[in-house]
Image 1 (cartoon, helix red, strand yellow):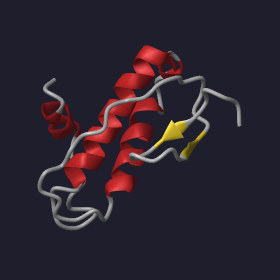
Image 2: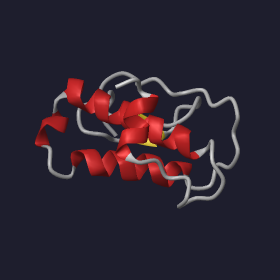
Image 3: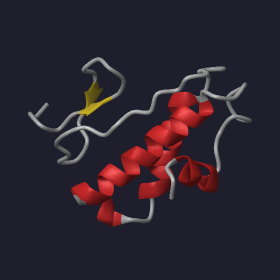
Image 4: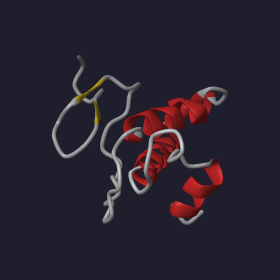
Length: 99
């Protein structure tokens, strides 16, 4: 793995290579965790939905926005019961982000 090409999840340094991204993206504190099932799937699904047709994600500024959106989706999912029923819509995630 090349230095500076690392995607980390959570408070511990783990992850894998992710383009040429350097730095970190804020995680969201979830005060009332109901169920963690599906949180990772939600986060990865949100990430993929944002990059599938948009090559500008190769730029760090856009990638940071996509990762923030992805983190928001994972956080929202933990506030609801179940995996699939807890997945947020795009509009719910954007509202969570204040957009």
